[in-house]
Length: 495
Image: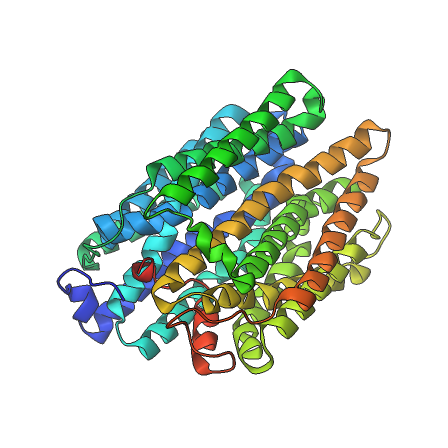
């Protein structure tokens, strides 16, 4: 592991001081994960009060996810280079301030701007919280336990989001879902300033500014074309221009990354089949999970006539299944192998989404909830082992980078999922189909792609030839530890 600065009180202090650090890190990540699911419950109210169409709702979600996806790797490097406490607290302040901007937004434009700012804060906060834990728990077994708690406790935010979003929106309107972040952010800043110790990695690489800028602009241009294409026309000059710009920018990104000595995305890693296959499958996971979740509350409100509060409760089986099953996914992968668990998980998730594509306005909830739970169980089984497979394919010194890339590919898939599945719904409606029919088509498309990905992993997710000094063999306890962390320590981001 790379050297760190002189030990801080939080790094070498008492059990109580490290417990405070763990609590702060978990609460910070909880806030980020809560925001991933709480917004979905409020989308129908946003559409009504802000007088926006489907494209506006897509931007509310994708503006946030896009910035997280493109800045996540750089956020970890910033934390290592400039101080983990400093970057964590800056991320908290930015995220909390952005939440206030969102709650006060008088129009869709202001709300999207606030979501962009939230994404920037989250991209700094999330990797820095994990880096703080890695520095505070230098003993591997203690670190494994701490990161396991970090992943488990903060993951409650995923399950709490739909319920909290439904309650707050029903009682106070959609701005309340952002105001809930203000007291959490204030507590984190006050406790963090007093109790967190600083640490950094003086040998951390330089920030890859060209790569970061090109990736943001390239994926942003692609997202614009996908979201706005249905409204403006797929052959309109603006849309064709956005696709052309995306192709040029992303090609430039690949060219720049291939020539840099310390790129944010080392292309050589993709020569490892295990790394490439696992990240491809992770992109599909993000696509199907986030893209379909975007429509859950809208289905229950607009198709089945539920209230916003009831819709939030009705979407709960998916996130609950993920929270319950996720802790066991790593153990199963360590025992049975990445291929078996990932393929099974993707198959279950695909089947769950396909069956959701057969739900109609008159389908009773007793025949709906298990489909959500099936999809959630499948995604939970797939996600952590896919990250573990990516980590397994590289050297231990690059495990943090591999984990960060896995998270980034999932977020990129999420951006594309919201954009493309939204385009499917809009295209079906423009041809005269109902909103219900459009949603069914989107769920079926997501399910079919996920099932195809399960076949892909079943055929190709074999163990690649280990790199020199690579991680422990499959089936040992070390891969299980890497999987359970879900995100490897940020201060091991480079050799």
